[in-house]
Length: 482
Image 1 (tube, rainbow, N blue to C red):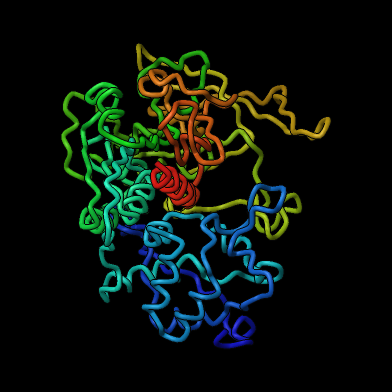
Image 2: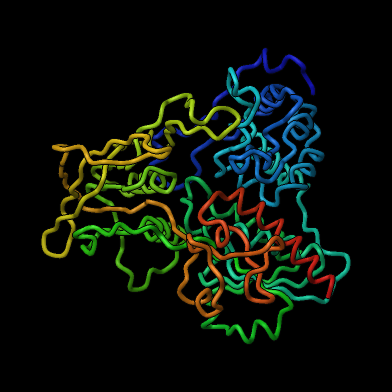
């Protein structure tokens, strides 16, 4: 620990962002990098506390506290404080394959679990992590790490999101020949097509993919496994197959009027804009454009926030965001005390750019003119604790309607898409519709492993990377036993 009293001497410094009026004119990164002096002071705030919950813990009944990757946060903070950037970079990469990505899009579970959160503000861990990765690329610390010896084993990975990329990189470094099959035009899955460029510019992904290609990973795009490539072919050519398709089945809203035009799933909307930013041709797809429209986003999570920011950049006239749950408290919540992830009100950069947010709103139906939506009909609800669980009931007389030219459904995802590969393999699924695997990540079908959101349901990028590392270890053990 560089400064034993650093956490007393230095306050947490907020990360600067480009002015809202400027940034809404483009899709470039919002936040600005931190200076060397700021990084030095912020890393000095780390207490090197006796039990660093920021590391991550799976022993608590909540299912985990802190970083799912078990990043050694106090260690890399100390390296940054002392200016030992190479050691910081090596330390961070020992647990995290893509720290530049988590440093941009992770909600920072580590900061929520920071001991300083008990009575002050946490260490600026996420931004320090990002700075380490960026310094690593600039200084040439991050280089391809091809295996010294090849095993002769071949592994096929279906899906190129964060879990699939992690499995691929780990297995390639173990010496196996790895091929990633991706149904879309470009590699990256959710990272490329689901997260807006203003949060994650795609050159960040491409830079890491170059490292993986140099390590021997083969990327096959525009390939729909089960249709363009048969399962029989994969079984004949590969020693193991890993499914990493994510949880792509969006949660629908089955109410009257749902079939009207201009009521779209959020991921369709976000994906289309990312493809446009990349210069891809939409062919005959209908453009989902918020320009000049009254936009209603249903769902108050990160995906909904991303829709707000995208609609603002497209030139929406008004943006409204509805959430069925009640508004959480602003700073602390006794129901989620430290070191748990706090259920509190969060205001994203997209919210700062302008939208009206409403909580405890239930969508009852949609109305339209012809085949297009023109109105959303809602009511207010209240939540009460009954028999140990929260119950919702409509508030009489609270019904209201408002104009809506474009409705974006951002209510999360239910499970991996079943149509196609999952159904053809006849995999065992849990009650939520996720792929069931054993302790070694093996599905019910011999030789088929699964990782990430395909198993857990929709979760965070950092958890997908953690899953990918664990599944790669399991596959490696299995292949070396053969």
